[in-house]
Image (cartoon, rainbow, N blue to C red; front, side, top):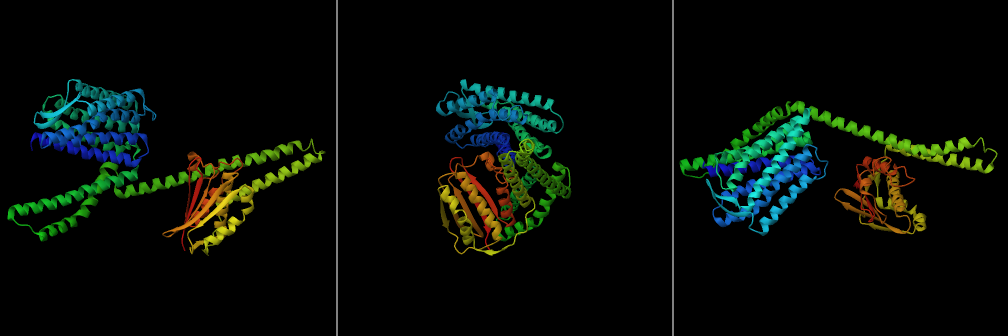
Length: 540
């Protein structure tokens, strides 16, 4: 291979390893800020490496100019995203962009604007050393590698300080990230020398092979030491997918190579030979895949596959137990809160009763308060029992539309009183579901009352039904004020409510009922635009 071919190969290896690493981290937690910035950083490296390879391998000046013009914005993005990643990974910034990162992004944006609108900082690609075409900068553009060097060194210093101050697992994570980054940037530095017109033998192009070493070291830290908190199950599935893909590519590559050898030696093409080669390789493909999976389990996860499966099962069971304990704690806290008010009212009247016993009005008030609050406590306990230990459902085939009509008719007087217009759009004629009528009626009643209370005075409730495959779908939409997104995610949890006098159990009970019918219930809402509750039940 020529030196230019080595340069291009190193860049392509960099693009492949970095893209795999970026996807591994991003797909684990796509909503986490650190993972997003790291994915952007990986994309910038892939952008640079791919387009740099295109520039060097360009057949003419026009093509080299085009690829170079597209490449530079990605190059400008590498250093600031690296700095941002390091600050987030070392927990030196809590999700906020500090002033150093702001300056880095600003400088990068200025370089991008100057590159796209002027010829002040970037020049036409020209031969450099062994490369027939390579990016160049103007005298003013010499500030680009200088700014890059400053930002990278700031990042490495901050990463080194974080590494020295950390302990245990965190220290192992940052160790691989630091040394991998040092090797990667030292290996990639000859590319900047090419930009400035210098060529150091051996360091160019072989130093660029150090950039994939950064990706491999970071990938090992991700898989072995949970850098970026990558989940075990996702790590396994993704790494095995990568292995299978690599094996598949190798499988087709070997078959293609065998066919070309036979063509060169014997001068003919045979589809029978090609088919036989595919079949022969397929016999070894599956055992080879399993063997490599076992090697990966041992090298990365340090345990055999069977033990790893048992560990995963234990982790899943621990997660379920934790969720149960969290639910119990939430219910206990909510119950204490809900019981405190009626008990406080009863206690207050009991304390004043001896002193005001001769007052008939107070005795009547005391009697009514105790009766009302006792009923309130009984209702609360009844709903709590229904949620915690629901009675077995009495399932039978029913037509949902008559059930909906009879339930909603119970609220006609309330609808008139609150000036609420009820609109029905039944589009599931002839549908039948297997359900407990009393329990489904309870769900419908609960949703209708919630909608009515949300609207208050003057509004509309729309009840829509339809069929979607094997599902009967009921939608109840109101024109109320909507639900805060923070509350929406907890809407079906016990004691989660937006009502002043609500206990937050109604929707929890409805959720339990629908789940016992093998159905689903969820809500969609935007503040100021109303709320839509959707119930999906399997058709009979």
